[in-house]
Length: 508
Image (cartoon, rainbow, N blue to C red; front, side, top):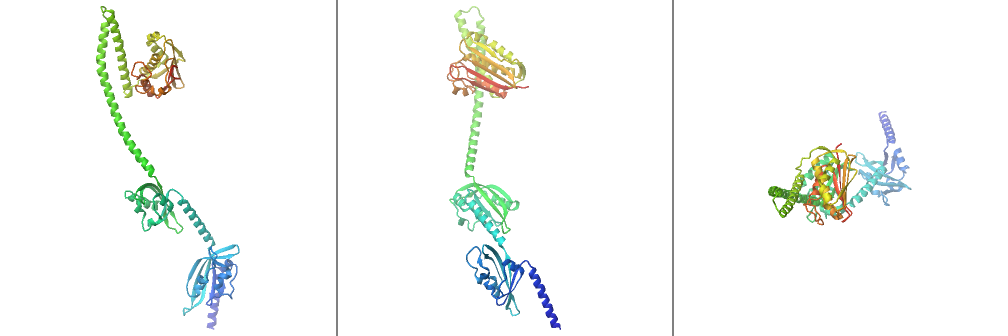
């Protein structure tokens, strides 16, 4: 009775296990000690498409299911099948079996285990089959992407490398490394990246790589040694990523910036040289200013004395006519010399920004008419007439004394270079927030190449035979520049007259 009860319980347990095996999503095949299949669950039938023949040894699986080594035309060797190895008492696993059914194919992972009796003899084998087709396709796509990535990196001019956490090089784009540094992949065997970095940069690179693993990215500059012993400058960026094995790695892309660094060094040297030259020019300018101040001082004192003495002699009534004529010539030349000294003083003050520009409200029209009156005698002598166009009567707010110098120099310049019996045309308008002024003469004109020289210091043209230092127009430019305006000259060439213009923004 008891034996029958135990047998019934065993039978019930078998049925329970059978039900469990039938419902498992895993494909399961059980074979006996002779290799004949004795059980195949529903998942195995669904996966393989048909049941194994119980009269055919499971070692004939290759022929029965048309099994090949994946991605090849070689049938899978029976002796490597896990079914076969399990019958010999070995537990094994393979994942390179490809089952072909016409145009369809699936990839299998098979794990087989032997089941022993108390005498350690194989009495059964149990095999678990898993469909890994999707994984194989993903693996294939990954390999294709890796191949594309490798082709891409091999054909760029930048150095690309991948480092693991042990700071070992796992990948370099060999073509770029060979072209830029002269190294082959073998040159990096049993070496770490720091072996190729200039000692001045090693500590910074180590810190950057550590930071990259911790924070996800890094960047910097370094000097890398070429195979021939020379160094190049590189600018690099690093980015952390997780590979297919779930390991942290970083990819570093380095760009050769040696040329840029050399240019930068050259620029720094040039800047240093320019700085020295600039300092020399500042000292030279200071020396020139002091020199001119000394000349002015030494020249002006005796000039004033001689001028005063000459004027005193001219007041006497008992001097011969010849003496008086000579004294007048001396007096006129003294006045001209005094004007030249004053012109130089004015320029030096403007050049040093040593002039305090004041604010006066005045009429431009009144100022121009007053200056015309100053030149009345010389205008009459040369028979020159002044014609006005659009002479605005509006008031402006500027330094009246500086504006008088500006207009006086331009009128004086026009009279000086005008022919006898000619006309000077003056146009002055105050509108739209600007004062626009022009003075046109019918004089000797200016060569086009000479126009840029007019407003430079001592910018007297070689074609001019007029007296003076050539500072008048330079003083005009200094005054116009102070008011953030612009001044220029126009001429169609020698013998065709000249027009001088300026434009100054005005206070509302």
